[in-house]
Length: 250
Ligand code: ASP
Ligand code: MG
Image (cartoon, rainbow, N blue to C red):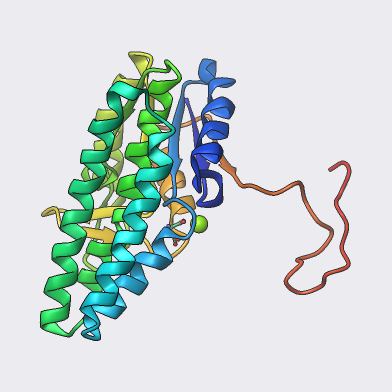
């Protein structure tokens, strides 16, 4: 078994998700478990929505929610066959109805707690993992979606939660290998988790790599691969120094 993690850019559109499907398809013999981030800039958008709502800008928050919903529906549509289109759209809409409820709640309360931040930001990976699962099926690859919140158990430090490893590993070991043994690609959202009593938490920004590591350690995997959408490795960090060049061989 291997874990293959794909970041936000790798799943930012139907086209990108289709590339992910073909990369995974080439490695089915290694029995991959796929971990995905939220699509593109979705996490930032969700945090902006939460912020606007809590400031009382309810209408603006609902408009941003609507835009994000359209984005998900539009991309997902290209990843299912005509018969399944209504199903995936309904699933996405259901999730966005819940986000709208959260927006209304936050705008009444006028306060954003770390717990609410997690509740809202978790929707990014909840949605991307469902959409990516459908994309595998569309390409005739057996895929099973597993909600990471059922397996990764954390403490209550919302937005920066730490996994309770023994509990988490035992849940992962119980759940994932049997699905993989049946020939399914297991798809899970990174970043998201839950407390022992089922309250949604997140592992901190950029936490999907951490999720992949936890899942890989829990299975246990032969290898954990962190895929990212760049052309190669540069000789220096382009944010610090912009005259680096691509390394030909390492
Ligand atoms: N989607 C989350 C974030 O943007 C987690 C991740 O991408 O690793 O921080
Ligand atoms: Mg990311």
